[in-house]
Amino acid sequence: VNSTVCAACEAGTYKTKLGNFACEQCSSGKYSTTSAATSEATCKECDNNSYSIEGSSSLDDCKCAGGYYDSTDAERFFR
Image (cartoon, rainbow, N blue to C red; front, side, top):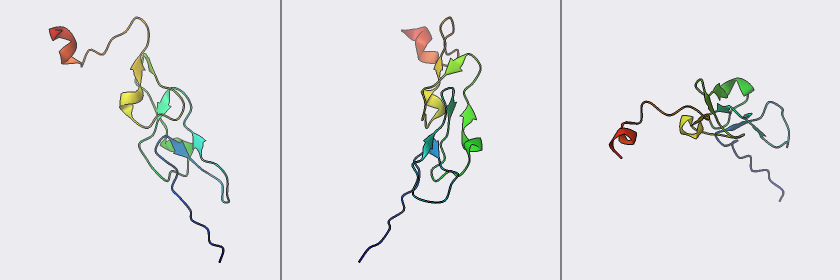
């Protein structure tokens, strides 16, 4: 018996087409927390002066660019 098991695209990816195609990654500088996403619009921009690698799935994946630091990281001031 042949059967198809369809799995959701993971967070950080999306798929717009019907059929057995691979999920596409959110581009660098963006992230998505949504699984089973059907549109690139689910990929959100990282905050200003931060970046992420392709396929990022969390805001935490966005890292500060050179010359910038995370001013919300209180631990940084107590190290």
